[in-house]
Structures are given as C-alpha cells and as structure tokens.
Length: 356
Image (cartoon, rainbow, N blue to C red; front, side, top):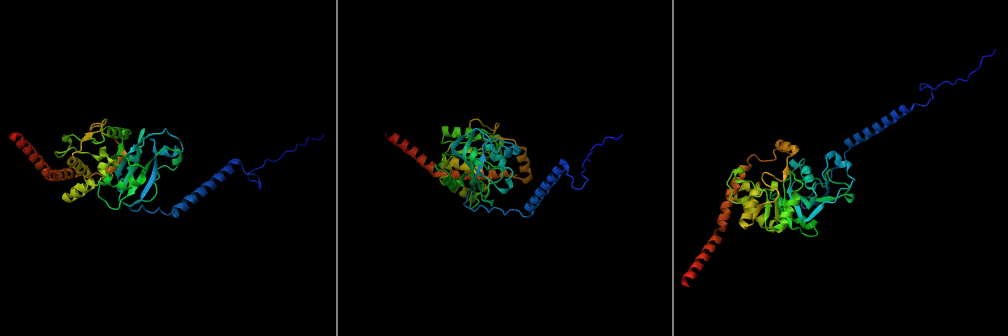
C-alpha cells in the first residue's frame, strides 16, 4: 500500500539567502536612512551656516508684515496660511516706538499685542540707532498675500538722541512710506504687553479732540517730585497730533533740555510734558483708561526680562525730578517777557478807562 505524497513547500526564512525581508524591517531600514540623511543635512547646515544678512544702514527702512490676530507662539506657524476676519485699520494713526538690543526678546510680545485687537494702526515704526540685520525676524509673516497684516517699519537712525527718538525719529520714514500723511501719532514703549483696545480708544479720543494730547497720568501721590505740569508717560501711551510732534519745535526743545540738564536726555516723558506745557497744549487722560486701569497687561516674561537685564533705571525718579525742576525754571524765564507784556497791556487798558 502506497502512502499519499504531499507536496510541502518550505516556508522562507529571513535567514535564507535571497529571501525577501519582512515589511517591518524594510520600514525600519527606510526610517533609519531618512533619519541619517536629515541628521547629515542638519550637521552640514550647522557646520556651514548661510551668510548673515547685511546690516541695516543708517537712513534705511526695513518693512515687514505682522499678521493681525492673537496666537500662541506654537500655533502661530500652524495658522500661517489661514484667514482671519479683517481688522478695522485706523489709517490716520501710526505708532512709533524706540528699542535697543537688550529688549529684543520683549519686542515681539509688544508688537503682537498691538495687532491682537479688532482695531489696528495704519503702521508701526520702530526707531533704533543700533545695528540690526536687514532681514525680517522670524515672528513676522511669510505669506502676506493671504493674510491681514500691519506694516512694521524698522528705521535705522544716523544718530542717537535718546528716548525722544520715538517722537521725532520716524519723521522721514513716515513721509517715505505713507501715501498720505497720517493725522495722529501714538507713542508707546517696547517692553509692555498692551491692551487690545489701546489703538481703538486712543484713535477715538484724538478724533474727537485733535488739539488735545491724551495719555494716562499718575496722581501726584505716586510721584517722587511735585509736578508743575501734567506728565505724559510714553509707557502708557501718548496720543498726539502728528504736526505737533514733527514740526521741528519738539526736537529743538529736547536738544536744549539735554544741554540744560544732562539727565533730560534719558527722561523723554518730562521733556515732552514740559514742551507741551510751554506751548499751552492741554493734556488729558484717554477715556477708558486710568492709573488704576492702565493700558497694558501684566506679562511674566517681560517682567523677568526687565529684572534680568535691568531695563529700567533704579534712579529714574531722581532723574525725573532734576529734569523737571530745570525745565520749570527755564519755562518760567522764557515766559517772563510774555507776562510783562500782558501786565503792561492790562495797565494800559486801566489807564485808558480812568481817562475816560
């Protein structure tokens, strides 16, 4: 009796020569090759970095686009190509600030807070006398055609006149970059995270009363000196008519103040406030904000950065007092001829009435 014969095929093994590799091994091999290629590319870029962009020369303007909206940093890149509702652009108001290399980490926080609200400025001007690359930082938009962006102009000045540059340093850049000159200038600081309503409230106040300068004042009890005029603080915002800031008189007054008292060069708030007092300009608190409800928000990162790099002078109160007293005396002496003429005019009127 013959037994049945079964044709049994030997199952291939990965150890057999010429046998096909299992799928997971092929995938692991491909993954390892891709990882090795990526590592080699990164190592090559690390060893051979691209040449840095040329520096921004004095007088040059670098224009970048900052996307409208408020995003977490990790989400900002993910949402790069998405649309957001169009903001209300206040074309008759531009913002001017000064900065320095020590505040490079705080600058993007401040800038994003200005475009987080429903109302955004016509443009933002960053005035700086220090050398910076002639290339937009990474936090600016790379796809401006599909997004609502605000123009941010980096302005390199030829000289450093101190913090007063935020008022007078952007003059030429505004004329070069704007088709029509804006009516108002909003001056802010680069180391605060501002309220999303700051542009809206300042623009409404300035349109309602163009001849008034708006800010957020401190009560006298909060000051280390006795102010003889309203003090406009740039950190809380100073909304001013553009021709009042850029007619040349403020620049001349600031130069005089620095010669009169050297500390006036670093306390632009006192210099601008004394200038406004000498011109008889009314200074008021902007509606919607007050000393208790200031136009900025608390930010731990900026606070830690300010402590680490000492962005604020510990002697600022004393500097404010010295500059204030010097300019009060100067304004009083400068106004003396006008007071004498006013007294003579009153005396002449009273003499004429007696003769009648």
